[in-house]
Image (cartoon, rainbow, N blue to C red; front, side, top):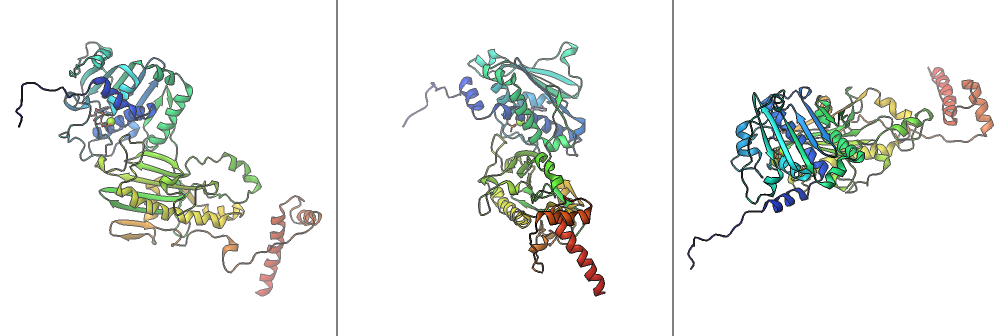
Length: 471
Ligand SMILES: Nc1ncnc2c1ncn2[C@@H]1O[C@H](COP(=O)(O)OP(=O)(O)OP(=O)(O)O)[C@@H](O)[C@H]1O
Ligand SMILES: [Mg+2]
């Protein structure tokens, strides 16, 4: 039996250890995205439960050899939040903020981790309402052995006040590797693409993000939807699973198909970007994954592996919850927690949707594109929610409990090639090239029409005659 003594053993983490552990597993680009997440959470808090008007908000980011800065007008940090929570390393269990908002912040590390990843000196300048203040994080503080609280400084000069409610973070004394990345155009491009992808929804809603003075353009992830009841529409599925609203759509990103090249469309094929092919996964409007074509999202798992025939298929899945910890994301928020039940259940539906379009592209393989594209003429590209709204009103959309599902195959709205229909017969024949040119000249006053077109036109002419006689 022992008894306590007046001696104690130190058990607090050293700053150096803490900082190196904290920043180890996050990439520089992801750390920057974390800061943008904070801006958007700020905008959401500012809206106080109402819809956020993202067009009113901006985020300006600068990355350069000797500094980093991010400036937003997203409401700023309230003083009591700065005093008690914002600069703590890790969220306090009693921090009940945002429990009823779709914010993404949950661990209480993102901002600090980003700063520590980049450099030894930082200044967080913020204005909430009319209250302005600054919190410096200096290299002296970082090197000090103790965990003294950070100072909160009041502005004394006009230039220390922000123009409106918002936050600006400056980081200087960048680490050497970071400085080299920031000076590199390739890295700037990487960050630009990451922002364009991950924050595409917000940018599409009007959020203005600038990187080094140039606006970031959103990537578009959309599926084709016809608003006509009997015309093609994507697969949709929506259901609440474990407090998370899951919305899924799988469809085509072009109605022009990947069949045989019609001559006039050869150029089109070369231009068409398949960036949005595959699966895009959104969590509370942030794209966690864009255009995945691997096992993660079901390809090659009971369905074929991805290959270029499927480049016209786009899938979008969104998880939405006011409880950020219920979302199937990892701590870096840029990867999925694939063991979560909500993900596993959703993946079954994702594959169900994919099967429809895999079989569709199989049917249309080796067919002239024009045959297919006429069926898609009335279809328009739509982002996930517009697509779901448009399809949900169809008569053949099934509602069971709180689940909504539309299967275009079962609803029989997908076009089939003529020769795949059981009542059709295929005609194939060959003639000397010279004869084909002669008939082509007769029909089109041009000897170079495609042989298939020449043959088909001859048939059409005879068919019209036959029908007339029949009447
Ligand atoms: N740009 C900003 N605008 C408004 N508030 C901010 C901003 N940046 C940080 N904050 C405040 O600072 C807090 C701490 O940010 P930090 O990113 O470290 O943690 P978090 O967002 O709560 O959680 P996570 O680690 O999951 O990102 C936020 O909860 C928020 O209150
Ligand atoms: Mg955060």
